[in-house]
Image (cartoon, rainbow, N blue to C red; front, side):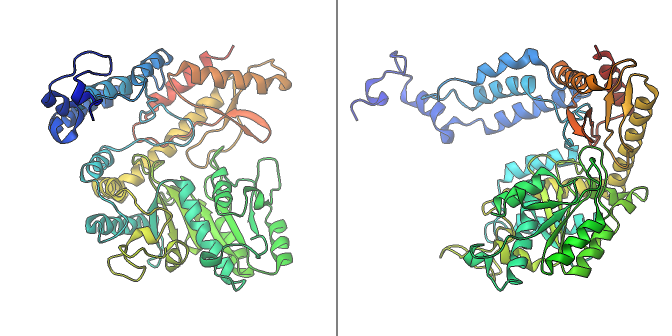
Length: 495
């Protein structure tokens, strides 16, 4: 080892290395110390950062050069925890996309309630592996409680059970994975043991509202993203129930129906109850993609949009959307939760608990094995604000969406393209005198300018063949003033 730095006394630049004690203090987390100090740095940065979210731009292009301060080769000699965390906080609070703030309307992204954020910090502090009861009784018990509370929040029957997963995509994957094994059984096959080889393609039927995450789930499960048969009666994607029923009758065997509770461009819903009738009549599996639309169940004003949800075989939802908990958080519910173990149980290594072992846990009920205790922020926010707090938040966002719709309707250079059943307002820029054939390019330019400007954030989509904006309101911090600012900025960017 005569060539080692410890032996030569030279650092990576060829200069004299620190003494052994100083070297180890910087390079070894056991000796670096200062655990409370670096956590204190985060705590001290959190208050000013969170307080600034209401007024700071969502994205500031001028901060992009800050990212260079994190780059470079992997250091041979560490700078120590205090310096590293100080640098990360300086760059992060400056250069991040401030999507936790009230003026981020792109995609469908919530923030993190104070209780959820504290619960998430607690999850990192305790660093539990929520795979098995034997690895963490705490994480297993809290996940069971959190799932029960979520089931109650959405008014699902007592028999429903599920698992917490990383996202709506994984919730769709989990649900459609269980559906795949159900379908395999009806063909006399054990898909878990033998796979899909030799089986026909699993029929999957949906409206034009089917989301890319459902297609991705089918892609990962081996069915293919193009396996979805779409039944739409117009360019918007509204379902053609009669055509779907004819197809189910023609198939004459097991199939999977995907109902979409909350379409991402305008927030519209498939008729879940009608699809539940079809599923019952033809022996199909009904999956509901309720990534954010499931929250319609929380208010009497919108509960009718998810009527029939209690008849679904599986339901997917996202936590880091309207629940307002930090990434990564989603959940899947099944009417027959025993199917999760069929789809996601694994042959145990000698040191792992078997599926029927009381020391087992949620690793056997979903796609992830080692898994974070993501139940803690969910438990914290539901314990803090309860059913009534979440109903109030949802209804406030419903009101804000209607306020935005009214502002759009009142503006002579804006045109709303759809009704507003929930929290998304789909509209486009349409100044008087601009020919129809030029509007798509104009709206693309305004959408690009909006993201480049960064004061508020909302991107473009294509709705019914027309380029449009589709701001989504699901952040607990958003107020009427944020909506007013959004409309003012959009109007100011029209060339």
